[in-house]
Each structure stands twice: as structure tokens, then as C-alpha cells.
Image (cartoon, rainbow, N blue to C red; front, top):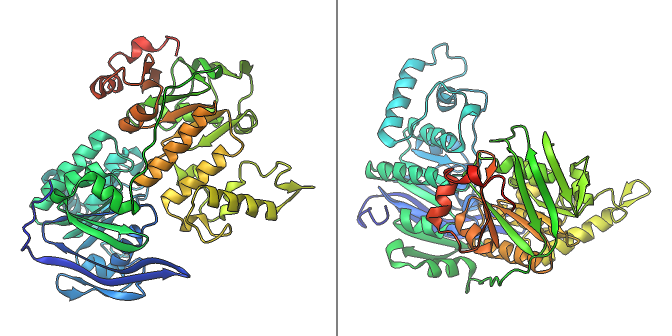
Amino acid sequence: MGSTAPREAETVLHLSGITKRFGPLVANDAISLSLRRGEVVALLGENGAGKTTLMNILFGHYTADEGQIEAFGAALPPGDPNAALAAGIGMVHQHFTLADQMTVLENIVLGTRPLWSFNLGKAAARAKIRKLASDYGLDVEPDRIITELSVGERQRVEILKALYREARILILDEPTAVLTPMETDALFATLKKLVSAGLSVIFISHKLGEVQSVSDRVVVLRGGKLAGERRTSDATRRELAELMVGGQLPVNEIGPSTPGAVLFELKGVSTDVTGGAALRQVSMQLRGGEITGLAGISGNGQAALAALIAGTLGNREGEIVVHGEAVRHWSPRAALDRGLGRIPEDRHATGMIGDMSVSENVISEAYRSPRFSRLGFLDWAAAATFAGDIIKAYDVKCPSPEARVRLLSGGNMQKLILGRALDGDPDIILASQPTRGLDVGAVAYVHARLIEARDRGAAVLLISEDLDEIQTLSDRILVIHRGRLSKPSLRGELSVMELGELMAGHGVEEGTDHET
């Protein structure tokens, strides 16, 4: 898709000297960039580099302390989302802003008419939505309820919201972070059609391969400053990565594993449905000194398996065995007491509580222990010291242990979760989508910590929809399809194509009852 916009095309957007401070933190430092008609500019940078802050200033959610913005030759009033919308700027956030119990149509027209209007013009709106969906490959039924939609369909609704309001500039914030490979391909096909029609796109991402395939130019931020700008066709992936991190990218070496005893085992386990497919007669073993990778298309039972291991979902049948002992009452507390370290799939919904402090979050799974509790009272000094230790050890960019977690970037939140999960060297580690939405530097850091845990003898279950991650880290690989597991394979034994076939269900049914 890249390099389609002519260099002499009209400049539709210009940001000049944008600076934004949050107390002593300078999130954006005199950043300038431009965007041409029919161009895709990728905004690249590590977690906390200032990308989302800059786009929130553009869209009017924040007001810049210095600098100005021009859209289509006119100054854009600061701090006014309505002015941004009126100027033709639309934004699709990484975390969707949809009303779950309303229809697709109601979500799209919400805010386009006065609340007291008796005529919502649903027939005309429905026709317009269907035409936009047809023109740009955004197939979704206007009368479906949002809760019935897949993640990919919800993203289509967000894009349709922007197009319905006649957006001429579209900001996409980490648009592929929660999409399957197939949904990502569908999104890129839509972007190609939009750009061909003259729409301009700012594409915020951490994924260098996607940036290279979708963009015309790349603007790199580092530490809140403009680190560099390149024509995509002229830049290598390594060059972009080094611009992001400010030096050479760390390379993790993973040697052969030395599998030990079985530390966690499922025997013929079935569950009820939760967040996708239920587990059906699943048997698996996690051995110390080994990373077991679980691949699969989203919604095929990964959520149920993670919830079962974490103790938040019970098994309807079958047996859970921990350290060689069958467990009758498995719960989150039992899991933690028996040495489970948990890295949950969604750091916002189940990993952290945004309005609580860093200290409160990092002790949330151990606040009753003598380490943090004295005679029934929390020892806040001990909590702050522990939080400070994690901040230092895991290089978390955060003002203090008392800072609200919601103010941190996704990568820094993930580092806090990692520090909490790996504290005390747990024997069993559940790492569910541990690098989703992270930049290349943060990904390398998380991988290094998981490899360290394996090498000291922990049993690691890595659940990921990133096949590269699965193939790179896993000593053994399982594939899940509709709640059933494939036969295990060793690292390098199966190609991406063969794993893809298993993810589509070919061969999984036969492998379910084999020892893993």
C-alpha cells in the first residue's frame, strides 16, 4: 500500500512545535509533522514515547501548552473535539468507545443529531451506512447489537463512525493490537480503498512489518521528541527499530530447554463457555524448565484455558493436578498459594485497576501476606518500597509509586504486571498475550524475563496469537481450535503454514487425547 501519495500532493494537516507537559513530565517536546492528501503516515515509537498524547491533542482531547495545528489551511481551535470533527478529523482509539447495548446504527449516529430530535432519520442513516460499508469493505449489519460483534467487526463500526461524519483525515491508534491476522488483512484492504478515495491516514503502531506494508512515510518519536522521519521505501526494519529505541535492539538468545518434572497438569478437563469456546476434554502438561506455547485464532478457547489455570473458571469435568497432587478446590487464591504467576490477557480490564496507585496495584495479589500486612493493617511503607523496587528493576517510566496507573503507557503497565507476577520466582507462569500492543523494545524485555524464568526451572505457558512469538520462544507448541488441543510439536518442527492449518482445525480433533 505504501508510497502511493505523490510528494507534491496538497498538505491537509500540519502540526507545528507541539509541546505538552504533565507536571514535570514533558510528553511532547516541540513536535512538528505534516500529512498530505491520500497519504498514510505511520507514527512509530516505544510505549510512552508520546504518540497517543500527540494524537489526543490533534483530536482535541488535550490542549497543547505550545504550538499550533492547521487542518486544510485553517487553524484548528485547541481542546475542542467538535472542532476536530467539523474539520474532517476522525479517530479510532485502540480501546473502542462503543455503547455495548446499542445497535451499530445507533452508535454511528449518536452525537450527530440533537437528543431532543424526534426524527433520527434511521432509514437514511441505514442506507448511508450500508453504502459506506459496501464501498470500503466494512461489512457489518446496522441493526446488530454491539455485544454480538467480534473485535474486528467492532473496529469496522468505529471506522464507519468516522466516515459517516465525513472524515477526511483518519487517526488509527494501534488498530491491529487486538485483531487476528485475517482481520488485519481485511483492515489493510479497507485502508487501501480509503486512501485511493483521497482519505489521509495517521497510523499509530508498534509493528514494524505492518508499518512497512501500509505507510508512505514514517515519523518516529522517542522520549517525547521527534527522533527521525523516513520515506518508508527507503528505511529498513532495523533502522526504524533503532530509531525507536535509540540504539541497537537487544537480541534474546534462547538455548535448548532442559525439561524437568510436570508441575501442572490437566486431565480430560471440560469447562463451560467464557469469552469464546469452552474447553472440551483437554489434557496437557506443563514441565519445569520449558516454555509451552499455545497458538490459535482468537475465541477458540484460550480465554477459558487461561481462566481455568488462573482459578477464575471452574472445570465441569476432569482433573487439575499441581505438583503431582490432584486439586479439588481450585481458585485464584489457591493458584497464587501454589506458586502461580499470572500475566493476564487484558492489562486494563483484569491486570490493573486504573484509578488505583502503582503501589496498590502491585500488592493487590499479596496484600494479606505478612510482607504487607501488620495486625490487620496495610503496611504502606512496605508497599511503596516494593513498588519502587519493581519500578527500578523493570525500568518502569512512572513519576512515583503513588501515581495513578491509568496515567502510564501500556508498556509500562505491562512491566508492572510482569514484576508483580514474577516476584518470588513462581514455579508456574501463565503468560497470556504478554506482549500485545507493546513496542519492539518492550517485547524484547518481556521475552528476556520469560526466558530467564524458564532457565531457572519454571513451567511457562505462553498463550499468544502472534505466531512469530510462539515459534521463537516455545520449546513445545500446542494449537487450540474450538476448545480442543492439537498434538504437541517441538520448536521448528512445523512451518507457519502447518500451524495455520491446525489453527483452522485440520488435525486438532485427532490430537486431543494424546499426551502433551
